[in-house]
Image 1 (tube, rainbow, N blue to C red):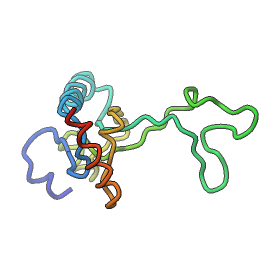
Image 2: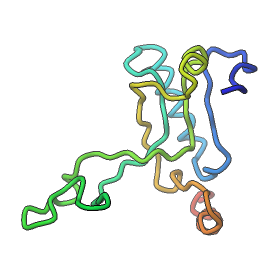
Image 3: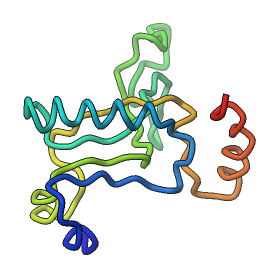
Length: 138
């Protein structure tokens, strides 16, 4: 976290360019929650943007969040699983430098829209984001 050493602010917001469809109002809300829940109330030690997934997951051998049999769980009742979107991380500078990472052990999972969760890792992701740009602007 070499760059963090050069930033002389008590709190750092790490925003990535590869998640281009997170709206300004989502950032504003994240900053508000960070100020309240992390800095003010100290209920959490950091914040990251996430998508809440209510989907069926398997590891290499078996289902990991439901029973794949007649006791099948409906998707709305699946356990909460959060996917890190890489759009925003927030933590105090001192802890980042001490731990060498921008998330603590008790982060606030700031849920963003599916659109805001698009992370461009491959060309196909770029094309999807480009195609959805009109939804972002609308």
